[in-house]
Length: 305
Image (cartoon, rainbow, N blue to C red):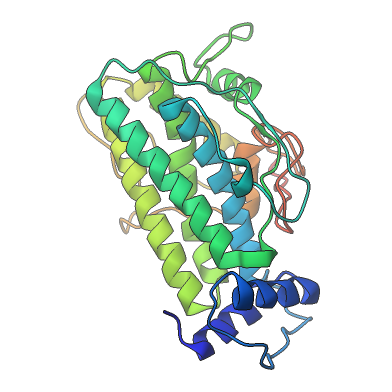
């Protein structure tokens, strides 16, 4: 269990504003961490330009909501329970999603394990944030995948892409998310001040990297190198001129571990991540997989025109 000093610092750095911090403190003392009384706490520097730890973790929570809904639908044909979708900001519903009729026992097991991981990530972040957590925003798992597939050239301008139609579509849809999750956590790491939260974020990044590696390997095994390259190129075209993505290789050579010249994972800023999930290279506050935007203070994509 966390020591009192650690929890004080955790809570102090975990509220997006003074009111959130008071709510977080109450939640931690009564129903959350449960180890801290109502002792005095330091005040965050209002002049600090960097987002608070809670803002960063709430941004991550939005992404985990999306991934959890996608995988839970694929593996079990259902999404998050209602009690795991509440919080600050407007709570939205989920459009699309159904159970995939897996033919491969291995792919079914992979989908099931990842779904459980993403569910645990949602539960973990909600518990860590306590009263400062954001609710699940509106999520689109239908038209958004078609828009992404059209942008990547996987389907024609008048064709639809159903991520739940078969195993190959499921793996390609998962590929859209997993690499983005890795680069998002890598990019967020320097913004997190609290070491306890930083360690947690590192653990989340590691699991997302495991997921990405599994998805990439199975795509390669099925000969979907061209399609994966198209998705990676589309992501890079949305988030700016910097190269922070990679396909899975060619028939002659693998690229299952996308990394820079130092073999380090790529990073994306919050804005760049939103460029991809909003499916826009422009500065927007909504679109794509989040038709009403994400909840929390990190909610605007970058202008990359």
